[in-house]
Image: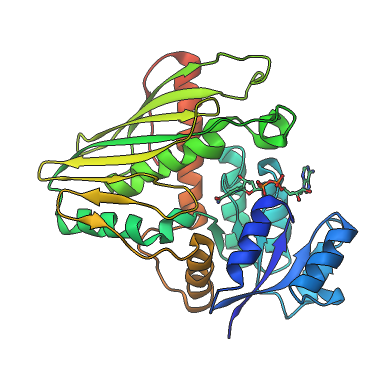
Length: 333
Ligand code: NAD
């Protein structure tokens, strides 16, 4: 059987996910949750979701009684993820939650606990974790092709544009570039190096405080230190032209991905070879893999569960703390 998925929040990314899911072999859209009746109508027709499986934000708890929904994919603004995840868990359905999983580590922990208590799984919409060139680099690192890892560089950013969007509203976004795009360098550092950071340092620059208000970071450079002695140096920004590059260095070689986290194709090379995996939409690969995780208990090569999302939230908080206190923050994940 296929994983029966309800999409919650029918905005721009949900649109991309819905299109990519048309190519899925193991997952299918069977439900829709939106605050806009017209969207429920048009999406319902387009994706063949019957009226009884269309919900709004007031009545979606009734998915509990819908056998045609196994999981809900939450694709709403960041600050809503926490409450929505807990409601879906209480309805007894698995949760796939977009990144950042929540706007604080405390909320993230509550989400993990709520899903555990309800006996459902919680996954984070980390699409790079299923991208073939990324997986090849991780595989080569595990095989020792790069030798002892000593350095990772991650550059993640773009010009955000429209100053009135929710991404620049602290209440809905929970932060700025770091929680939205810098998070790719954060978990990229973790899966590329293959360790969990034990300290963080960070520096913020803000050139436009009018646009990037209090609590909404424009540009942050941060460094992560790992138990082996490896270090990562990363840049997160909402105010530079496309930055999307990973570089991993080891005693015996290197890997680079550029672009590293865009919608694809991802391109790159290592000291041994070019990285030329075919390009299938990442969301197609992600949803097929998540179907296996949720229905068969498959363990993916790079985990995407709630505990992983929580680690990224803890690192985000440590980075903000390092900026505020202008000092090195140690952390245990
Ligand atoms: P969007 O603004 O295009 O869509 C958000 C949707 O949520 C809209 O349809 C909006 O109507 C709805 N919504 C429900 N309640 C709302 C409220 N109270 N305020 C505002 N909107 C509300 O945003 P998006 O780009 O689709 O992002 C949604 C989520 O997906 C975010 O968490 C974002 O970080 C994530 N995302 C992930 C990726 C990825 O590559 N994994 C890419 C883009 C976005």
